[in-house]
Image 1 (cartoon, rainbow, N blue to C red):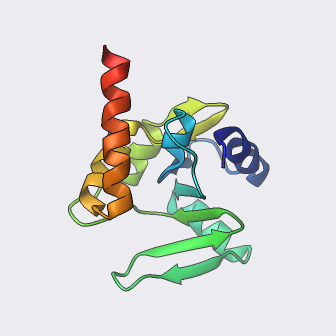
Image 2: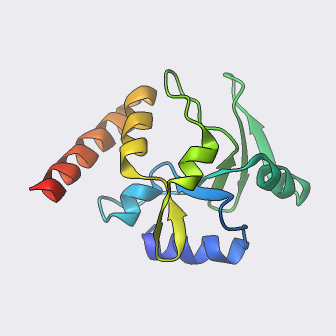
Length: 137
């Protein structure tokens, strides 16, 4: 999905400002590095609980992570993967606004993808690092 499409869909959710940020591969899409297949969102626990109460499906992964999903969205109140255990409030507070929606900074996405280490994440690590190198030249 192109970032513009994701941003419009997120705006329609009506999530409260300062209580969520787009994460996963969406920041790559926001910076035109590559398109995203879905829209991952890190949210405060109260937003997570409100979406769950609205009927969003909760998935519990073998490692204990809990995520909600609906349509193209996957929402988590925490984002711990391996050695990556960030403070969700900090990720949300430090997010950059792109097309009117908060997006977790690429530096954090890079840390997360390195820690998660799946093959697709390692491909994204290379893309992000190349992008960051170009931006600093």
